[in-house]
Length: 504
Ligand code: URP
Ligand code: ZN
Ligand code: ZN
Ligand code: ZN
Image 1 (tube, rainbow, N blue to C red):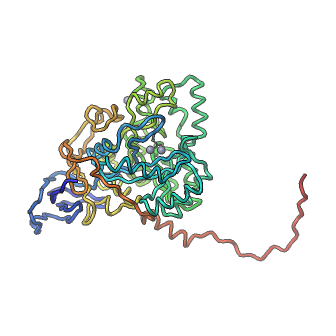
Image 2 (cartoon, rainbow, N blue to C red; image 1 turned 180 degrees about the horizontal axis):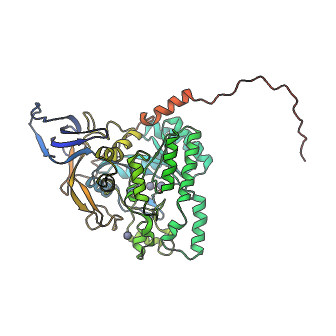
Image 3 (cartoon, rainbow, N blue to C red; image 1 turned 90 degrees about the vertical axis):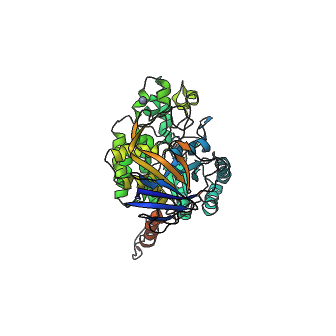
Protein backbone atom coordinates (compact mmCIF):
# COMPACT_ATOMS: atom_id res chain seq x y z
CA UNK A 1 0.00 0.00 0.00
CA UNK A 2 1.24 3.57 -0.69
CA UNK A 3 2.39 5.45 2.40
CA UNK A 4 -0.70 7.39 3.44
CA UNK A 5 -0.39 10.99 4.62
CA UNK A 6 -1.90 12.07 7.88
CA UNK A 7 -5.49 13.10 7.27
CA UNK A 8 -7.68 15.65 8.94
CA UNK A 9 -11.36 15.36 8.05
CA UNK A 10 -12.54 18.79 9.04
CA UNK A 11 -15.91 20.32 9.84
CA UNK A 12 -18.15 17.32 9.21
CA UNK A 13 -20.85 15.74 11.30
CA UNK A 14 -19.37 12.54 12.74
CA UNK A 15 -22.11 9.94 12.91
CA UNK A 16 -21.76 6.87 15.08
CA UNK A 17 -24.36 4.32 16.03
CA UNK A 18 -25.19 6.05 19.32
CA UNK A 19 -24.80 9.76 18.54
CA UNK A 20 -23.73 12.42 16.07
CA UNK A 21 -21.44 15.39 16.72
CA UNK A 22 -19.84 18.21 14.78
CA UNK A 23 -16.18 17.22 14.98
CA UNK A 24 -12.89 16.81 13.14
CA UNK A 25 -11.32 13.38 12.72
CA UNK A 26 -7.55 12.97 12.73
CA UNK A 27 -6.17 9.87 11.03
CA UNK A 28 -2.58 8.62 11.33
CA UNK A 29 -1.02 5.29 10.37
CA UNK A 30 -4.35 3.89 9.29
CA UNK A 31 -6.16 4.49 12.57
CA UNK A 32 -8.25 7.25 14.09
CA UNK A 33 -6.05 9.28 16.46
CA UNK A 34 -8.46 11.98 17.59
CA UNK A 35 -12.09 13.00 17.28
CA UNK A 36 -13.15 16.43 18.49
CA UNK A 37 -13.96 20.01 17.64
CA UNK A 38 -11.38 22.09 15.78
CA UNK A 39 -8.40 19.78 16.20
CA UNK A 40 -5.97 22.23 14.55
CA UNK A 41 -6.78 24.89 17.13
CA UNK A 42 -6.45 22.20 19.79
CA UNK A 43 -2.80 21.72 18.85
CA UNK A 44 -2.72 19.11 16.05
CA UNK A 45 0.45 19.60 14.03
CA UNK A 46 -0.22 20.66 10.42
CA UNK A 47 2.97 19.01 9.17
CA UNK A 48 2.35 16.49 6.41
CA UNK A 49 -1.35 16.81 7.01
CA UNK A 50 -3.87 16.46 4.22
CA UNK A 51 -7.07 18.32 5.08
CA UNK A 52 -10.38 17.09 3.70
CA UNK A 53 -13.18 19.61 4.04
CA UNK A 54 -16.32 17.77 5.17
CA UNK A 55 -18.45 20.83 5.87
CA UNK A 56 -22.11 19.93 5.36
CA UNK A 57 -21.24 16.24 5.02
CA UNK A 58 -21.65 13.20 7.23
CA UNK A 59 -18.54 11.33 8.35
CA UNK A 60 -19.46 7.72 9.07
CA UNK A 61 -17.89 4.33 9.73
CA UNK A 62 -17.33 2.56 6.40
CA UNK A 63 -19.98 0.00 5.57
CA UNK A 64 -19.54 -3.68 6.38
CA UNK A 65 -21.24 -5.92 3.85
CA UNK A 66 -21.99 -9.09 5.79
CA UNK A 67 -22.74 -11.23 2.76
CA UNK A 68 -20.94 -11.45 -0.59
CA UNK A 69 -19.96 -14.14 -3.10
CA UNK A 70 -17.10 -12.82 -5.23
CA UNK A 71 -15.97 -15.10 -8.09
CA UNK A 72 -18.04 -17.94 -6.64
CA UNK A 73 -18.02 -21.15 -8.69
CA UNK A 74 -21.76 -21.89 -8.70
CA UNK A 75 -24.36 -23.68 -10.82
CA UNK A 76 -21.91 -24.44 -13.62
CA UNK A 77 -20.60 -20.90 -13.81
CA UNK A 78 -18.59 -18.42 -11.75
CA UNK A 79 -19.91 -15.11 -10.43
CA UNK A 80 -18.48 -12.35 -12.59
CA UNK A 81 -17.54 -9.76 -9.97
CA UNK A 82 -14.26 -11.08 -8.60
CA UNK A 83 -12.47 -10.01 -5.43
CA UNK A 84 -10.86 -7.10 -7.31
CA UNK A 85 -13.80 -5.61 -9.19
CA UNK A 86 -16.27 -6.48 -6.44
CA UNK A 87 -14.31 -4.82 -3.63
CA UNK A 88 -13.50 -1.79 -5.79
CA UNK A 89 -17.21 -1.36 -6.42
CA UNK A 90 -17.80 -1.78 -2.68
CA UNK A 91 -15.48 1.16 -1.96
CA UNK A 92 -17.30 3.35 -4.49
CA UNK A 93 -20.47 2.68 -2.56
CA UNK A 94 -18.97 3.49 0.84
CA UNK A 95 -18.39 -0.10 1.96
CA UNK A 96 -14.92 -0.70 3.42
CA UNK A 97 -15.22 -4.33 4.44
CA UNK A 98 -16.91 -7.42 3.07
CA UNK A 99 -17.46 -10.83 4.59
CA UNK A 100 -17.50 -13.43 1.83
CA UNK A 101 -18.46 -17.10 2.03
CA UNK A 102 -16.16 -20.08 1.60
CA UNK A 103 -18.36 -22.74 -0.04
CA UNK A 104 -16.77 -26.22 0.14
CA UNK A 105 -18.21 -28.96 -2.03
CA UNK A 106 -19.79 -31.88 -0.17
CA UNK A 107 -17.09 -34.31 0.95
CA UNK A 108 -14.33 -31.71 0.65
CA UNK A 109 -12.11 -30.28 3.36
CA UNK A 110 -13.33 -26.99 4.85
CA UNK A 111 -9.76 -25.93 5.54
CA UNK A 112 -8.60 -26.60 1.99
CA UNK A 113 -11.56 -24.60 0.70
CA UNK A 114 -10.77 -21.80 3.15
CA UNK A 115 -7.14 -21.70 1.97
CA UNK A 116 -8.31 -21.67 -1.65
CA UNK A 117 -10.59 -18.66 -0.97
CA UNK A 118 -7.71 -16.86 0.78
CA UNK A 119 -5.56 -17.59 -2.26
CA UNK A 120 -8.18 -16.02 -4.53
CA UNK A 121 -8.93 -13.03 -2.35
CA UNK A 122 -5.62 -11.92 -0.83
CA UNK A 123 -3.95 -10.72 -4.04
CA UNK A 124 -7.11 -9.05 -5.32
CA UNK A 125 -9.03 -7.36 -2.52
CA UNK A 126 -9.17 -3.56 -2.48
CA UNK A 127 -10.84 -3.38 0.93
CA UNK A 128 -10.53 -5.43 4.10
CA UNK A 129 -12.35 -8.72 4.15
CA UNK A 130 -13.16 -11.71 6.28
CA UNK A 131 -14.62 -15.16 5.57
CA UNK A 132 -17.63 -17.12 6.77
CA UNK A 133 -17.39 -20.86 6.03
CA UNK A 134 -20.30 -22.99 4.81
CA UNK A 135 -20.89 -26.41 6.37
CA UNK A 136 -22.23 -28.38 3.40
CA UNK A 137 -21.83 -31.90 4.78
CA UNK A 138 -21.24 -33.50 8.14
CA UNK A 139 -18.59 -35.84 9.55
CA UNK A 140 -16.05 -35.99 12.39
CA UNK A 141 -13.58 -34.36 10.02
CA UNK A 142 -15.92 -31.41 9.43
CA UNK A 143 -16.43 -31.05 13.17
CA UNK A 144 -12.68 -31.00 13.77
CA UNK A 145 -12.09 -28.58 10.89
CA UNK A 146 -14.66 -26.19 12.34
CA UNK A 147 -12.62 -26.21 15.54
CA UNK A 148 -9.36 -25.51 13.68
CA UNK A 149 -10.95 -22.76 11.61
CA UNK A 150 -12.28 -21.10 14.73
CA UNK A 151 -9.15 -21.44 16.82
CA UNK A 152 -6.44 -20.90 14.20
CA UNK A 153 -7.89 -19.33 11.08
CA UNK A 154 -9.99 -16.41 12.25
CA UNK A 155 -13.44 -17.80 11.42
CA UNK A 156 -16.31 -17.33 13.88
CA UNK A 157 -19.35 -17.86 11.65
CA UNK A 158 -20.55 -20.93 9.75
CA UNK A 159 -23.41 -21.05 7.24
CA UNK A 160 -25.70 -24.06 7.02
CA UNK A 161 -27.89 -24.54 3.94
CA UNK A 162 -31.41 -25.90 4.29
CA UNK A 163 -31.81 -25.60 0.49
CA UNK A 164 -29.84 -26.50 -2.66
CA UNK A 165 -30.66 -30.19 -2.26
CA UNK A 166 -27.78 -32.52 -3.20
CA UNK A 167 -25.42 -29.55 -3.52
CA UNK A 168 -25.12 -27.74 -0.19
CA UNK A 169 -28.19 -28.83 1.78
CA UNK A 170 -27.81 -30.58 5.12
CA UNK A 171 -30.53 -32.27 7.21
CA UNK A 172 -31.91 -31.33 10.63
CA UNK A 173 -29.81 -33.88 12.49
CA UNK A 174 -26.66 -32.52 10.82
CA UNK A 175 -27.73 -28.97 11.58
CA UNK A 176 -28.19 -29.97 15.20
CA UNK A 177 -24.62 -31.29 15.24
CA UNK A 178 -23.20 -28.27 13.41
CA UNK A 179 -25.05 -25.79 15.63
CA UNK A 180 -23.81 -27.69 18.70
CA UNK A 181 -20.25 -27.37 17.45
CA UNK A 182 -20.73 -23.63 16.80
CA UNK A 183 -21.96 -23.26 20.36
CA UNK A 184 -19.01 -25.22 21.72
CA UNK A 185 -16.51 -23.11 19.75
CA UNK A 186 -18.17 -19.74 20.40
CA UNK A 187 -19.09 -19.24 16.76
CA UNK A 188 -22.36 -17.98 15.32
CA UNK A 189 -24.50 -20.33 13.24
CA UNK A 190 -25.83 -18.82 10.03
CA UNK A 191 -28.61 -20.34 8.04
CA UNK A 192 -29.97 -20.21 4.51
CA UNK A 193 -33.56 -20.88 5.46
CA UNK A 194 -35.60 -22.57 2.72
CA UNK A 195 -37.06 -26.07 2.60
CA UNK A 196 -34.90 -27.72 -0.05
CA UNK A 197 -36.97 -30.90 -0.35
CA UNK A 198 -40.11 -28.95 -1.10
CA UNK A 199 -38.32 -26.71 -3.61
CA UNK A 200 -37.05 -29.81 -5.45
CA UNK A 201 -40.56 -31.30 -5.69
CA UNK A 202 -42.30 -28.03 -6.58
CA UNK A 203 -39.70 -27.24 -9.26
CA UNK A 204 -40.51 -30.54 -11.00
CA UNK A 205 -44.18 -29.66 -10.81
CA UNK A 206 -43.66 -26.23 -12.40
CA UNK A 207 -41.59 -27.65 -15.23
CA UNK A 208 -44.20 -30.38 -15.83
CA UNK A 209 -46.80 -27.60 -16.12
CA UNK A 210 -44.68 -26.02 -18.85
CA UNK A 211 -43.56 -23.12 -16.64
CA UNK A 212 -39.90 -22.83 -17.58
CA UNK A 213 -39.32 -19.06 -17.15
CA UNK A 214 -38.00 -17.12 -14.13
CA UNK A 215 -41.51 -16.78 -12.64
CA UNK A 216 -41.30 -20.53 -11.98
CA UNK A 217 -38.35 -19.86 -9.66
CA UNK A 218 -40.59 -17.85 -7.34
CA UNK A 219 -43.67 -20.02 -7.76
CA UNK A 220 -41.90 -23.14 -6.50
CA UNK A 221 -40.50 -21.28 -3.45
CA UNK A 222 -43.39 -19.28 -1.96
CA UNK A 223 -42.97 -17.45 1.35
CA UNK A 224 -44.08 -20.45 3.42
CA UNK A 225 -41.04 -22.39 2.23
CA UNK A 226 -38.77 -19.71 3.69
CA UNK A 227 -40.90 -19.23 6.83
CA UNK A 228 -41.04 -22.94 7.68
CA UNK A 229 -37.27 -23.30 7.44
CA UNK A 230 -36.68 -20.11 9.43
CA UNK A 231 -38.80 -21.41 12.31
CA UNK A 232 -37.15 -24.84 12.10
CA UNK A 233 -33.65 -23.32 12.24
CA UNK A 234 -34.62 -21.14 15.22
CA UNK A 235 -36.07 -24.18 16.98
CA UNK A 236 -32.93 -26.24 16.44
CA UNK A 237 -30.60 -23.39 17.47
CA UNK A 238 -32.66 -22.75 20.58
CA UNK A 239 -32.52 -26.43 21.52
CA UNK A 240 -28.73 -26.28 21.68
CA UNK A 241 -28.65 -22.67 22.92
CA UNK A 242 -26.63 -21.54 19.93
CA UNK A 243 -26.89 -17.98 18.60
CA UNK A 244 -28.42 -17.90 15.13
CA UNK A 245 -28.02 -15.46 12.25
CA UNK A 246 -30.55 -15.80 9.43
CA UNK A 247 -28.94 -14.60 6.20
CA UNK A 248 -30.89 -12.98 3.34
CA UNK A 249 -34.30 -12.58 5.02
CA UNK A 250 -36.50 -12.03 1.97
CA UNK A 251 -40.11 -12.37 3.10
CA UNK A 252 -42.52 -10.77 5.51
CA UNK A 253 -43.37 -14.22 6.89
CA UNK A 254 -39.76 -15.06 7.70
CA UNK A 255 -39.08 -11.60 9.16
CA UNK A 256 -42.13 -11.94 11.43
CA UNK A 257 -40.87 -15.29 12.72
CA UNK A 258 -37.49 -13.73 13.56
CA UNK A 259 -39.17 -10.75 15.24
CA UNK A 260 -41.33 -13.10 17.35
CA UNK A 261 -38.33 -15.20 18.34
CA UNK A 262 -36.46 -12.09 19.47
CA UNK A 263 -39.51 -11.08 21.48
CA UNK A 264 -39.35 -14.50 23.14
CA UNK A 265 -35.75 -13.74 24.13
CA UNK A 266 -34.03 -16.02 21.62
CA UNK A 267 -30.57 -14.97 20.44
CA UNK A 268 -31.36 -14.65 16.76
CA UNK A 269 -30.45 -12.00 14.23
CA UNK A 270 -31.97 -11.32 10.81
CA UNK A 271 -30.12 -9.93 7.80
CA UNK A 272 -32.20 -8.38 5.04
CA UNK A 273 -30.25 -7.56 1.89
CA UNK A 274 -30.16 -4.53 -0.39
CA UNK A 275 -32.15 -6.37 -3.07
CA UNK A 276 -34.99 -7.23 -0.68
CA UNK A 277 -35.09 -3.68 0.67
CA UNK A 278 -34.83 -1.96 -2.69
CA UNK A 279 -36.88 -3.97 -5.17
CA UNK A 280 -39.39 -6.82 -5.34
CA UNK A 281 -40.30 -10.04 -7.08
CA UNK A 282 -42.82 -8.63 -9.55
CA UNK A 283 -39.83 -8.52 -11.92
CA UNK A 284 -40.00 -12.31 -12.35
CA UNK A 285 -43.06 -11.67 -14.53
CA UNK A 286 -41.27 -9.07 -16.70
CA UNK A 287 -41.81 -9.68 -20.40
CA UNK A 288 -38.09 -9.60 -21.20
CA UNK A 289 -36.50 -12.90 -20.20
CA UNK A 290 -33.08 -11.47 -19.32
CA UNK A 291 -34.62 -8.79 -17.09
CA UNK A 292 -36.57 -11.40 -15.14
CA UNK A 293 -33.61 -13.79 -14.98
CA UNK A 294 -31.35 -11.11 -13.50
CA UNK A 295 -33.60 -11.08 -10.42
CA UNK A 296 -33.33 -14.83 -9.83
CA UNK A 297 -31.82 -15.52 -6.43
CA UNK A 298 -32.64 -17.68 -3.45
CA UNK A 299 -34.74 -17.12 -1.42
CA UNK A 300 -36.50 -15.16 -4.17
CA UNK A 301 -37.58 -11.54 -4.09
CA UNK A 302 -41.23 -11.49 -3.12
CA UNK A 303 -44.02 -10.49 -5.53
CA UNK A 304 -45.90 -8.77 -2.67
CA UNK A 305 -44.82 -5.16 -3.38
CA UNK A 306 -45.23 -4.13 0.26
CA UNK A 307 -42.34 -6.43 1.26
CA UNK A 308 -39.40 -3.95 0.96
CA UNK A 309 -41.16 -1.36 3.13
CA UNK A 310 -42.09 -4.01 5.68
CA UNK A 311 -38.52 -5.31 5.92
CA UNK A 312 -37.21 -1.75 6.24
CA UNK A 313 -39.63 -1.03 9.10
CA UNK A 314 -38.39 -4.10 10.95
CA UNK A 315 -34.79 -3.12 10.28
CA UNK A 316 -35.46 0.36 11.64
CA UNK A 317 -37.04 -1.07 14.79
CA UNK A 318 -34.33 -3.67 15.55
CA UNK A 319 -36.43 -6.71 14.69
CA UNK A 320 -33.85 -7.16 11.93
CA UNK A 321 -30.27 -6.22 12.70
CA UNK A 322 -27.77 -5.97 9.83
CA UNK A 323 -27.71 -5.56 6.07
CA UNK A 324 -25.75 -7.51 3.49
CA UNK A 325 -25.95 -7.53 -0.27
CA UNK A 326 -25.63 -11.25 -1.12
CA UNK A 327 -23.74 -9.88 -4.11
CA UNK A 328 -23.40 -12.87 -6.46
CA UNK A 329 -23.49 -11.52 -9.98
CA UNK A 330 -23.86 -13.33 -13.27
CA UNK A 331 -23.89 -11.60 -16.63
CA UNK A 332 -26.75 -12.05 -19.07
CA UNK A 333 -24.97 -14.77 -21.05
CA UNK A 334 -24.32 -16.69 -17.82
CA UNK A 335 -27.94 -16.34 -16.72
CA UNK A 336 -28.86 -17.68 -20.17
CA UNK A 337 -27.69 -21.15 -19.08
CA UNK A 338 -31.26 -21.38 -17.83
CA UNK A 339 -33.10 -19.87 -20.77
CA UNK A 340 -35.21 -23.03 -21.22
CA UNK A 341 -35.34 -24.11 -17.57
CA UNK A 342 -35.44 -21.72 -14.61
CA UNK A 343 -33.74 -24.29 -12.36
CA UNK A 344 -30.55 -23.79 -14.39
CA UNK A 345 -30.40 -19.98 -14.06
CA UNK A 346 -27.38 -19.20 -11.84
CA UNK A 347 -28.82 -17.70 -8.65
CA UNK A 348 -27.64 -14.27 -7.61
CA UNK A 349 -28.03 -10.50 -7.79
CA UNK A 350 -25.92 -7.36 -7.39
CA UNK A 351 -25.80 -5.04 -4.37
CA UNK A 352 -22.28 -4.63 -3.00
CA UNK A 353 -21.92 -1.19 -4.58
CA UNK A 354 -25.46 0.04 -3.96
CA UNK A 355 -26.34 -1.38 -0.51
CA UNK A 356 -25.48 1.79 1.40
CA UNK A 357 -27.39 4.00 -1.07
CA UNK A 358 -30.45 1.76 -1.02
CA UNK A 359 -30.58 1.70 2.79
CA UNK A 360 -30.08 5.46 2.95
CA UNK A 361 -32.75 6.14 0.34
CA UNK A 362 -35.40 3.69 1.52
CA UNK A 363 -34.52 3.96 5.20
CA UNK A 364 -33.21 7.41 6.08
CA UNK A 365 -34.55 9.55 3.22
CA UNK A 366 -37.97 7.94 3.58
CA UNK A 367 -37.99 8.80 7.29
CA UNK A 368 -37.98 5.25 8.66
CA UNK A 369 -34.62 5.45 10.43
CA UNK A 370 -32.21 8.16 11.50
CA UNK A 371 -28.55 8.51 10.51
CA UNK A 372 -27.44 6.69 13.67
CA UNK A 373 -29.60 3.66 12.99
CA UNK A 374 -28.23 3.74 9.43
CA UNK A 375 -24.71 3.36 10.83
CA UNK A 376 -25.89 0.59 13.14
CA UNK A 377 -27.47 -1.49 10.37
CA UNK A 378 -24.82 -0.89 7.71
CA UNK A 379 -21.75 -1.26 9.91
CA UNK A 380 -21.77 -1.31 13.73
CA UNK A 381 -24.12 -4.23 14.34
CA UNK A 382 -22.18 -6.41 11.91
CA UNK A 383 -18.94 -5.45 13.65
CA UNK A 384 -20.43 -6.42 17.01
CA UNK A 385 -22.00 -9.71 15.90
CA UNK A 386 -18.93 -10.88 14.01
CA UNK A 387 -16.50 -9.64 16.69
CA UNK A 388 -14.81 -6.86 14.77
CA UNK A 389 -15.89 -4.10 17.13
CA UNK A 390 -14.45 -1.57 18.02
CA UNK A 391 -11.67 -2.05 15.43
CA UNK A 392 -14.43 -1.72 12.82
CA UNK A 393 -17.91 -0.24 12.97
CA UNK A 394 -17.16 3.00 14.83
CA UNK A 395 -15.25 6.24 14.42
CA UNK A 396 -13.37 6.45 17.70
CA UNK A 397 -9.79 6.83 18.87
CA UNK A 398 -7.90 3.63 18.08
CA UNK A 399 -10.37 2.29 15.51
CA UNK A 400 -9.32 1.47 11.95
CA UNK A 401 -9.75 4.54 9.78
CA UNK A 402 -12.41 2.96 7.54
CA UNK A 403 -14.56 5.97 6.84
CA UNK A 404 -17.14 7.13 4.31
CA UNK A 405 -17.98 10.78 3.80
CA UNK A 406 -21.54 11.06 2.62
CA UNK A 407 -23.17 14.10 1.05
CA UNK A 408 -26.77 13.96 2.28
CA UNK A 409 -27.90 16.62 -0.19
CA UNK A 410 -26.48 15.07 -3.37
CA UNK A 411 -28.35 12.52 -5.48
CA UNK A 412 -27.26 9.88 -7.94
CA UNK A 413 -29.15 7.57 -10.26
CA UNK A 414 -28.18 3.92 -10.17
CA UNK A 415 -27.43 2.39 -13.55
CA UNK A 416 -25.53 -0.54 -15.02
CA UNK A 417 -24.10 1.99 -17.49
CA UNK A 418 -22.26 3.85 -14.73
CA UNK A 419 -21.75 1.33 -11.96
CA UNK A 420 -18.33 -0.06 -11.12
CA UNK A 421 -19.31 -3.71 -11.09
CA UNK A 422 -18.42 -6.22 -13.80
CA UNK A 423 -22.01 -7.40 -14.25
CA UNK A 424 -23.99 -6.02 -17.19
CA UNK A 425 -27.28 -5.47 -15.33
CA UNK A 426 -28.35 -3.65 -12.19
CA UNK A 427 -31.52 -4.65 -10.35
CA UNK A 428 -31.81 -1.07 -9.00
CA UNK A 429 -31.63 0.52 -12.48
CA UNK A 430 -33.07 4.03 -12.47
CA UNK A 431 -33.38 4.36 -8.69
CA UNK A 432 -32.64 7.95 -7.65
CA UNK A 433 -30.75 7.89 -4.36
CA UNK A 434 -30.12 10.75 -1.99
CA UNK A 435 -27.04 10.56 0.18
CA UNK A 436 -24.05 10.02 -2.08
CA UNK A 437 -20.72 8.59 -0.78
CA UNK A 438 -18.20 11.19 -1.99
CA UNK A 439 -15.01 10.05 -0.26
CA UNK A 440 -14.11 6.56 0.97
CA UNK A 441 -11.13 5.99 3.24
CA UNK A 442 -9.77 2.50 3.85
CA UNK A 443 -7.18 2.00 6.62
CA UNK A 444 -6.43 5.70 6.54
CA UNK A 445 -5.94 5.97 2.78
CA UNK A 446 -8.29 7.90 0.51
CA UNK A 447 -9.19 5.14 -1.93
CA UNK A 448 -12.14 6.76 -3.67
CA UNK A 449 -12.87 10.43 -4.16
CA UNK A 450 -15.28 12.20 -6.50
CA UNK A 451 -15.56 9.15 -8.73
CA UNK A 452 -11.83 8.45 -8.91
CA UNK A 453 -10.14 5.38 -7.40
CA UNK A 454 -6.73 5.33 -5.81
CA UNK A 455 -6.39 1.71 -4.83
CA UNK A 456 -4.50 -1.40 -5.90
CA UNK A 457 -5.40 -5.06 -5.94
CA UNK A 458 -4.25 -6.58 -2.67
CA UNK A 459 -4.41 -3.35 -0.63
CA UNK A 460 -7.15 -4.86 1.53
CA UNK A 461 -6.29 -7.25 4.35
CA UNK A 462 -7.82 -10.43 5.70
CA UNK A 463 -9.31 -9.67 9.11
CA UNK A 464 -9.35 -12.68 11.45
CA UNK A 465 -12.22 -12.83 13.94
CA UNK A 466 -12.09 -14.31 17.41
CA UNK A 467 -14.86 -16.54 18.82
CA UNK A 468 -17.25 -15.66 21.65
CA UNK A 469 -18.25 -12.20 20.47
CA UNK A 470 -19.55 -10.53 23.62
CA UNK A 471 -22.52 -8.99 21.83
CA UNK A 472 -23.71 -12.48 20.96
CA UNK A 473 -22.39 -14.72 23.72
CA UNK A 474 -22.74 -12.77 26.97
CA UNK A 475 -26.40 -13.73 27.33
CA UNK A 476 -25.76 -17.29 26.19
CA UNK A 477 -22.98 -17.85 28.76
CA UNK A 478 -25.11 -16.45 31.56
CA UNK A 479 -28.06 -18.62 30.57
CA UNK A 480 -25.86 -21.69 30.46
CA UNK A 481 -24.91 -21.04 34.07
CA UNK A 482 -28.28 -20.10 35.48
CA UNK A 483 -30.85 -21.80 33.29
CA UNK A 484 -29.58 -25.40 33.20
CA UNK A 485 -32.36 -27.97 32.91
CA UNK A 486 -32.68 -29.82 36.22
CA UNK A 487 -34.38 -33.05 37.16
CA UNK A 488 -37.17 -33.13 39.74
CA UNK A 489 -36.02 -34.75 42.99
CA UNK A 490 -38.63 -37.31 44.07
CA UNK A 491 -38.88 -40.53 45.98
CA UNK A 492 -38.40 -43.63 43.84
CA UNK A 493 -41.56 -45.27 42.53
CA UNK A 494 -42.02 -48.50 44.44
CA UNK A 495 -45.26 -49.76 42.96
CA UNK A 496 -45.99 -52.45 40.45
CA UNK A 497 -44.55 -52.39 36.88
CA UNK A 498 -46.22 -54.41 34.14
CA UNK A 499 -44.15 -57.05 32.39
CA UNK A 500 -43.93 -56.65 28.62
CA UNK A 501 -44.49 -59.79 26.62
CA UNK A 502 -41.71 -60.66 24.19
CA UNK A 503 -42.95 -59.80 20.69
CA UNK A 504 -43.02 -62.18 17.72
O1 URP B 1 -29.15 -16.71 -4.84
C1 URP B 1 -28.25 -16.60 -4.03
N1 URP B 1 -28.53 -16.17 -2.83
N2 URP B 1 -26.99 -16.91 -4.40
C2 URP B 1 -25.89 -17.00 -3.57
C3 URP B 1 -25.88 -18.24 -2.72
C4 URP B 1 -26.66 -18.06 -1.46
O2 URP B 1 -27.54 -18.86 -1.18
O3 URP B 1 -26.41 -17.13 -0.70
ZN1 ZN C 1 -27.94 -18.46 0.85
ZN1 ZN D 1 -37.97 -4.26 -13.78
ZN1 ZN E 1 -25.51 -15.65 -0.36
